[in-house]
View 1 (tube, helix red, strand yellow):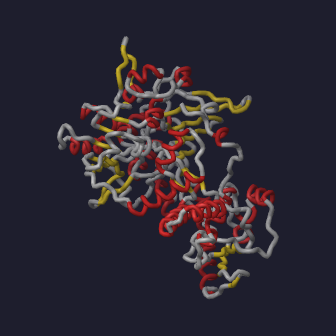
View 2: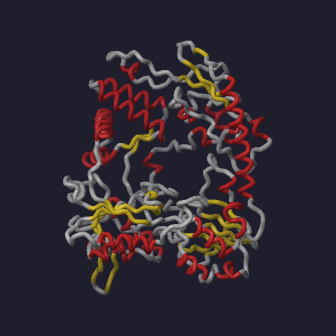
View 3: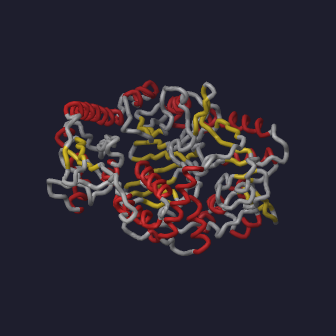
Length: 573
């Protein structure tokens, strides 16, 4: 994106020509979420929308943006927002998401707890994503200590600075290169001096972040070779973990809320490529691993990966191998890593480090969102975050914010109600089918049990299919105890063909295995035979493009680039 995306200054209306004679005016406003997070005010053709993205609408922040010169006409009623696209991560009337402590209250609680420990105590702050930069700055100033980052995170945050590579290293951050595009843009990142340092006269003033390990605060990634964190065998380091809030003594975790989980973690992952690819990998494991119990653990690890997200986390071992050898990973090395991870996954015990938890949500509570919407009274609201599988009218924009809008539109609610009603109708038919055919099973040619899962046809949904939403949020394939990997076959378009009425899954793993027959030891699933002609990839692609049978690209695993990874990946800064 570096060659396509262009940096814009905050609070500065910028005219962007879409086509000759058609322009829009875009203004970026700080979103109080993380470094670089902004809202977009887009104006043109007599219309105006505000796209918030992720925001933390604390009262002080709402009061500050109300005074923003560009937003002032909309907050005072001189102009009207036609639509607001709102961060709805925690938009619900249910507890515990109605009210959160402010960020300032959370930091105060953290500093009170940290201040109770001796002066030589070492702390480890869990920063798995962006948005905790102010906590770093507060901790660093309070404890008079800089914060150690691993090489990857130092490179990420070093790219915020306009200092060159030599100056950043003088400030304590070891980075491989300067951010020349930022330097050439003439823009300054507001948080960069406090984090990375700045030029002060003839010398470089360091920021709160450093690549040096001999400090009291660490926020480096575990397992990346930090001599302090990775050698804490006596569990003496105090861990600091942010949460969203707490209710009745129960901590509500922040991890992954609204996206961002793992943004600051380096990960080497193996994409499964579906059941076919994993079967080949497991055949290699079966031929290479003599220990039956270890093989069983590896198979269990791979099966669980298929159920969850289709990716194997190869942990730090693969990163270190690549870093040390700069060579491609051999299959033997991959099998060794899988074996090691399977053993660690089954026997690893978490260290008993003392832990400090403090409330610090990066997203708005429901009451904060209402206060934000009340200021602008937009004509309509669209949510930025929607779970169409579990959506109910209780989560509609009318129910949550209807009394705060200046018009009775709620176009998104209309779309979601159509999807909701279609989903209820489909679930009703599915329940009736299960009740009528509970004992109805068939035998395939190889003796495997075959189960039918009925899909909604295009005729079933024709009357309620929204024309603009693209696809239904219905889980068309529901895994059962007999078909634990059923949903994976949506991605195996070459092995499984969507039909109007049903999809068939064979769900038998062979029970009798021998050491000489490696494939039989790990036979996960075999796709059943079809009575109808299989569609070609071209036909499947065409059907997905036009939405035939209520299916879309997402039902086939999404669009995937066929280019090499080297071409896809942009160079690191």
